[in-house]
Length: 442
Image (tube, rainbow, N blue to C red; front, side, top):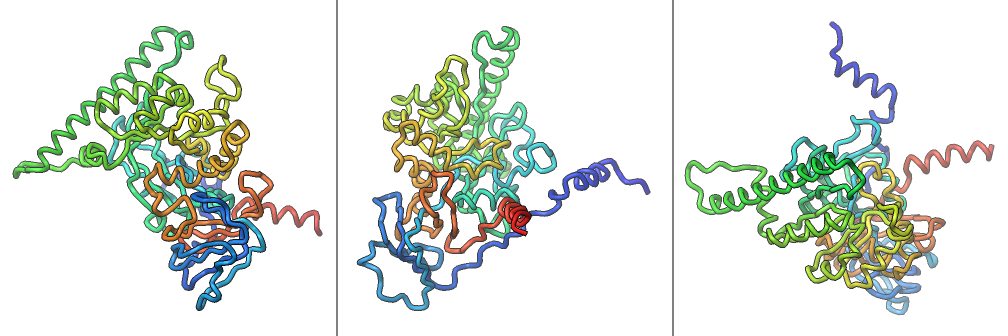
């Protein structure tokens, strides 16, 4: 019997890209079965000053205590003792805008599960689509990125893409990896090309299309408010609605609206909209956020700067505008953190997150604040500062050991733990390195 066209296409795809048919072979870390005492380390708590020669104890996946060398416990029963010989200990980096687990090879459609059809899809959940066996996950965590906010992207003509989830980058299944879900609802604000960049008719059409999507969301929010009232006192004819149900935490201000916007006009429109609808807002992207810093500070809107290392959006902009944005926001008193590019095509480059922060530090951001921008600051903005972002008693033992400053490209991450489980730092790139190094050793 002849095979169907979909089967033939699938067979061709996996013959051309054999790596698609398997995931990474790194085993998830084993649950912690005894205390671990790390000593003789340069500890960087982030929430306080570094501790030279310090020690840190964690048990059952949780940090129990830490301190300077003169407070080192005489003995901890049954503990595994690790002497770092003055290596550095940091909390795991947090990627606050990522497509990890949702895309493997951007050019191959079968490996991309980023979005669904529809302009308003608030009931979509990113976590259930995450692939725990993605080859990109071990690569990211080998450079200290141990936690990521996985974000659904808006499809063609989309506006509300669904809810994001904060994922630990270790686990057998997406349920194992999920730290918190949902974290927030994501809106991709319509972009209006600047005057002169398009034909007037095209620009008018784009503006009308964007306005229509915003009106549709306004109408959906109005429906959700009516649904909320009906839900409080339902009659026998009441029927649940998954789309409207997903909007109720947003209306109750339990979840924020992550607005993906870059330009001044986009950000102003989004600020006006969220103020009018009485929604909590977090700005994502924020290329022009520094231009509206006083307003963002006044309205207490945090900013997730998605990519420092990028080109200016406009020909007239100075080349270093993206590099200076973080320092400008810090000087203005705006809460912010730094993420990698976050878009679907940048998932393979999540390992470069610390170098985004380093670029900001090279252009005016205080180095300590640059480290905070990829550790404690994203934890605060994402609402998980009680568990992640710094080395403090009571928080998750999600941390790594490095040979030096992790913002420097020469620094190597040598060991890492996620919730107390030591993880395998090998990955496809390290295996290829080991393979081809032997060519010159033999």
